[in-house]
Image 1 (cartoon, rainbow, N blue to C red):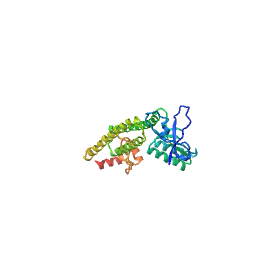
Image 2: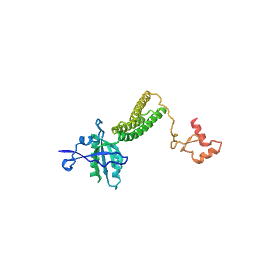
Image 3: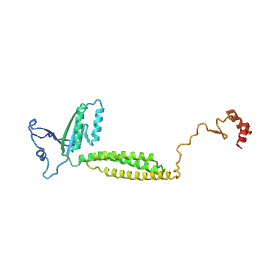
Length: 286
């Protein structure tokens, strides 16, 4: 039968946080035999609430190639963890978080050629410090989502002002909104302590849904009018109409007309007499 064996580090004399790391091992591997309840009870005052447990992953990977460190950093951020210092990250204890760290530890040791250590511990510093660090990280992501939502609303407003009610624009806006919702869902999943900006991000995302619904109704209304035979809405041409090749006009005659060569045109231009070709053309059309 195995027990929890706890390793107490030497008291930190600086200003950094103090953790109590725990390791699971067998009784015969260590003479100090304490259960979790017995060990932690000596550090808690009577009547105090059960503290939040934390998971700490400390790792080391070779410096070359550098892509290994970058890939691990991205996966740590995706899991929602924060770095206490270089190569030391923390997550609130939980089933999903522990699975994420266990997979990452296995990857570091087997695929990245490094070493990794996973601890379950309790923070003994002032309450709320780590929670605030997590909320700061999530608020930064929420603020970026809010900024993108504001751009989305501005684009809908511009398209409405120009009455650009087309299905192509509607499809593009629906794809943009789907990306915002997916992004918000990922951040919400790793928002462990309900960061304050999450409410603002959810509110403006609802505004984006409402704005897109109104724009969609106008697109279908414009399509109904077109099907009923009404004239389509006029829009300013962005580029001037291009002149078709071979129909450039010179004095009312198409270029390439038989008998209207360059010399004939120059001669007709320099003389008041329209010339025999023009007189013949006028007789045919009169």
